Length: 119
Image (cartoon, rainbow, N blue to C red; front, side):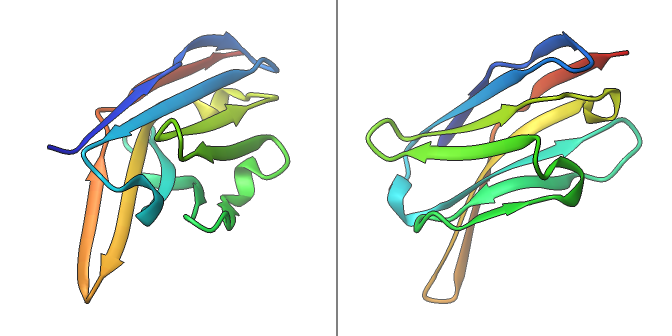
């Protein structure tokens, strides 16, 4: 059974920092690209940052220079370090694991963790 368990969300003032963690189980962690998505009320879910198994990074323009993503295969964990937070970063943040294997897509989601940035 695949599980992605997020932690680290909460309430923070604008300009502050939070570090989200996502621990994966039930998957071959090294085979998956890992990502963080977010969804604000009334908005579509959007990619925040991703990291491939080979360490290639991708960031949404809105978070470049403020957020970083990293992973540790020994711990089956991916982190999202969020600095200089803004009220517009307020959303539910979801961990994602995905891979393509012989034409089949595997895509898993965590339950989400709330991040609220007050002005």
